[in-house]
Image 1: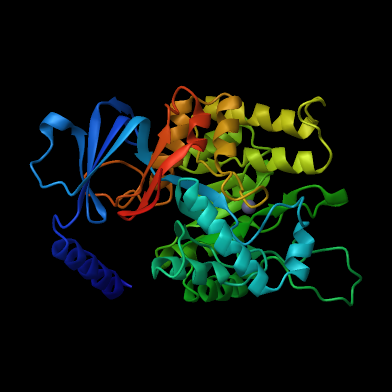
Image 2: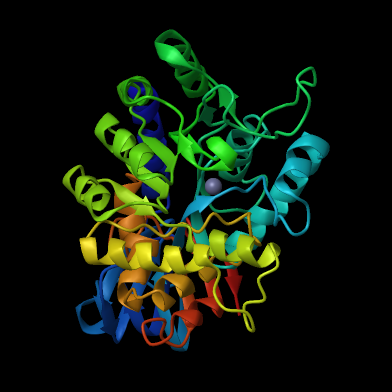
Length: 422
Ligand SMILES: [Zn+2]
């Protein structure tokens, strides 16, 4: 691992050296959100694939500029980092999850994913953390590598492969006992089995481990914990010794608490977290990916006419729990469970975060610097800062005044390459 890392660093350094001031681009936007704060009248210089300078024009280094891009009225900011996606799923109102897992071939699912990653990039998402292929094996690893090799356009992918579930907990379900169906994730239980499966997933080159710490397998379909705290700690121990962290799907307070005590770093969904749960998360520095947009989408697929009907209980509860999360000071990531709704519509989650009470500046930080910090990639992306990779977007207007400005993406640059400019 270390050798490979050094090798990669060497390649990266030689690349930068060879291209020293070969192609400096100067961006002149109305304002820059650098991942932390807004700055009027800043310029940004990009040299090759990295950011050379961000600041006032008067203090800029004297370098030959090859191309100047003026962005009148536009805000330049780091490429968005989607924290919870499933690039191998598409909206459930098109095809229910069960049918996607059971009836769509791997080839079809990959073909769809190629579109999904392209649409995401065009929408200003330059990094995606993917939370499991849901039955499509390690297709996410192959897509990540295809993007990195330049075969298809797409965001940087941080992938978790098959994900891990406890025996009996996960779907597709609803078949009689002699019908064997492929599951949406890999089953493992107990110490030996979990050690083997986590190592196997690591061997398939995933970037982090996703575990379902609870699922709707309780009495009458209620969400209930799956793994014991000891089992979760085993997963974390094996993942961590390989330099990887663990993300846990968890809605119940009990599963969240077990996960946090076991050393998991992000909680996905977190619907039934209590004030105590949030306190524990804060103490252990665990982030919450609230996936507000997924619940909103599913409620509408189930018949809720949002513009007419009163809010279903599920939505009211989610609103209240998100408010409580904000008040608790727990780190909140931007992750909407996109795939449940359309890829490229990632901003929907940010709009809901603001609608549910978060400051636009906090939401914007969540989508850039906070996610970069939480996902251990802040040495590469997430801020407009000299030395970081040039993952840059520009949008019409000011997203701090109106978060929906993020829907009007005019420029997308990833790794110094322009994928969109209009
Ligand atoms: Zn998910």
